[in-house]
Each structure stands twice: as structure tokens, then as C-alpha cells.
Image (tube, rainbow, N blue to C red; front, side):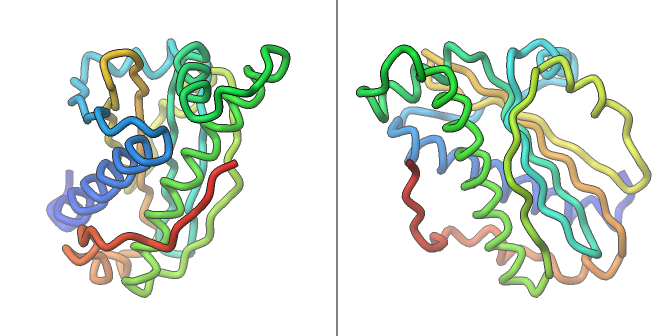
Length: 191
């Protein structure tokens, strides 16, 4: 990794890990979630999950892709804990929607932090697709860096992946340690 990107990447990686953990702890109503390190040899797990919730942050200087790789049974358990009244006929769809919303809120927190550094960035709508489609994301481009980790509470494990592609070096001077500030963004109500 180039030295000029190394420090900025570490700040962005730490900010995204923190945001994802907080979203799972608060929105999934499970404070016992924690981050598990993901070893390079474990990257095959990214391909073998059942579903992926994906969202992008993009601007003229940077593109960020955040994905939650998960098994539907785990998502159903999370949804049942938060909204136990959903009927069996709609629980699969609602669980996938809920995972998209978790990715949306996480990306929104990262967008908020980037906007505080004067980085002009937009946010896509979240999408959900089959886990094997991760194969299409495996080729890295110039100035693209990635990180992966798991969030687990012993009953469920969700794998997060995060990639950054830089379009302009001007972004490097904007991102700094202030992004790691724990001040919460505005509240968001899910479902």
C-alpha cells in the first residue's frame, strides 16, 4: 500500500468498522455484538454467503462500496428480535430489507463523517443480491483498497467488506483523525 494512502485508509477503515458495529449494536438491539478480525485466508467466506446488502458512497474524489455478507437465517433472527410480529409469509423479504437498511444507516454515518471534512459525496440506494455475485467484485482497480471484518454476537455472524477507490489525491488532505470522533449523527428510525 502506498504511504500516501496508508494513513487515510486506516482512518477510513477504523471509522467504517466503528460505524458498522454501532449500527448493529443499536439498530439490531444487541449490545453484545463485537468485531472479529478477518484473516486474508477467510476472504473465501465473502463468496459463500447467501446474500449481500450493498451500498455506495460516491463523489468526484472517492468511491466507497460497503457490503454486508450474510445468511438469510441470521437476518431473520435479527429481524424477529427487533420486530417479532412479522408473519412467516413476509419475513424473508422483510429480513432482506432490514439488512439493506442496516447498510444504508451505516453508509449514512460514514457519509455524515465525510461531509464534516468537506468531502462532497452522494449515497446510493441499498441493493440486495445473491452472495455468489461477490465474484464480480474480486478484481481490484488502481488506487483501490479494501478491508473485511466480521460482526458477531455468538448466535449470528455477519461479514462486512469495504472498498475505497480514490479518483483524486485532493481527498487525502481532507480526511483526518476528526472522522474518528464518536459524536453521533442525527437519529434515524428504522422501519
